[in-house]
Length: 553
Ligand code: NOJ
Ligand code: NOJ
Image (cartoon, rainbow, N blue to C red):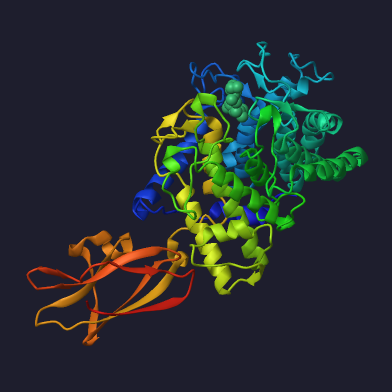
């Protein structure tokens, strides 16, 4: 299970720079590099004792104390945050994190023993989602238990333990880590088949995210237990049972019914979070575990993304192959129901992981299930078909280029990482500096294939125009996209006159894009003569080279 250390090292070593359509590459590069280090700093500032009043190793959800009050520690947020820090430690990105990781684990062990409204250590207390930041119980009413919590915690601890085993540190692993892990593992093995509150803490029901995480945890527990000489039969059996149950969430609707409790449609970012958090690079595009590139997960992704198009004003007017703002689920009313940073980032992360798998497999398979997803990447005049497309083929390069472009569009280009952003204006909303949002930004940005310049999202267009000119006059191209100077005639692109009266110019332009343009004549004094209306229109292909031969009009 999980990343091989080499793949991880390569992944973290990648230097990242993304571009979105409306932001220049330089703006975005500098935003990302500042946001990346800011995210890490702010994330660490939300952990005790850095954060005043929080016990050592306690992760606060957010410093916000009113509307909403998030000054508590949630096992889920805390485990997902430490999964990121542990990945950074074990992959060698940040070796200074070790004392903090050990503090977090020690605190988790204490929390396991705190009796709380869900029960004590042996009667269900391990399912408690939320504690006070001084490591005592939170006793007000709440949606409890939340059975994803022990699964997330044990997965993070096992990642750390596996690393220590590989460096020969068996004693600490067996004597300190194993007993903590075993408590959570037994809880998961015994209770995966009972309902609990979902990760959004709202409905007591079966929930895809919870089940998927439990499956991952039981598998990790089985191989870890084996490695240190434990009897793992029960966990193994339960892991098989959980995997079987997991299949029941996917239906003929073409998407995962993540959680239908409370009358919801079931389309929920719950499923995307599950897919990215249970990504296993060695599992390829396996659809039984809903890997990021599996046909079922991609079909689900497409349906989920589309469900947010009509409900947020900031999504209106976007083309089918552009990025949208993504919330938890469309029926959400919390703070009025808005997009969230961590769910929007999760979409980019799923696409990145899918790209990573394609590049390992050197092919893309399009099935009848995933066809609608792939078709949504293409412009209306391009029709994709089912089949297997090897790297190097036109379809492969067009699809991967379109997916990379989409990822860049999903990267926020400004803003503090609060919990939500306004569905009308895009401004940050709800809890400020949400620790989980920072963690999501870091994992998204450090994903494999978080590629830099969009060169591979370009195709070549060879323009020519038959145009006579008087002495001193030249012919240029200007058009509707940044690469064609956004209609700014002072920055129009000069064509080559060596084949006069045919003027030529080859340009790399973004794939699968509708572009309007015109030729202009410019005099030495800057006077501009435009071609007559209407604007010329080209639709660039997904890859390769095309000719655009015109006669001045
Ligand atoms: C607080 C929970 O944390 C949040 O997920 C939920 O949506 C609101 N309460 C409303 O139930
Ligand atoms: C509300 C979210 O729904 C839940 O998933 C999270 O654990 C808490 N807020 C704390 O961030």
